[in-house]
Length: 107
Image (cartoon, rainbow, N blue to C red):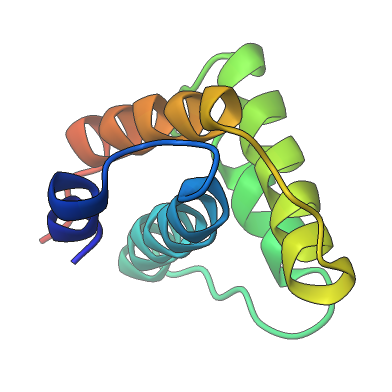
């Protein structure tokens, strides 16, 4: 769905928040599914931090992990405080999503 949105609306300052929120969900779902496959469960308080931390087990670089953690932070700022993010950050998030999708293969 995110790819269809980007294809029709593009990546811009106006679409950045929507892209960032949805890319975050896709990234965390991919990580969460891999965790479950490996016998781990992340839920409740601290679940999102656990998913980001699990990226080390999946051999992501510290820069990628830091981006994922900042994505977690900024996604919350969008949802709860009305923050407006820009195209540049959305493009970085989309690159991270591509890396996550290519590196995390689930059964």
